[in-house]
Image: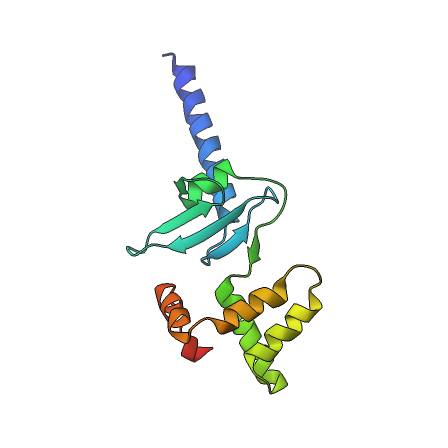
Length: 148
């Protein structure tokens, strides 16, 4: 290897490290569901039981790290945080409280606002689920139903 070859390799290493740093700088720091910069892919960013970041891309069986998802999945759009089911449940609960009504009434109103999607049927099915079932699911996902 010539002296110039080594210097050129070091330059490329620096360029690549800078590209990785730039790509990861804009990646989300708050766990949640996000639309990626490509504008199409969705990623679920969460912390596992050991506190390590995991990034799951919809339709891809692999688990990514912050660096690998930022490098492999890039584009022109900014990252966009999407609502999770927990976020939606909290917002629906707040809306019910502000309207002085119950969650079921709010859900029925939302179902009426959505045409042709079968939302009313889904809302009825969800409402008729046994409370114990819902509690078990909420517990499994770490959602405190009492706090909603």
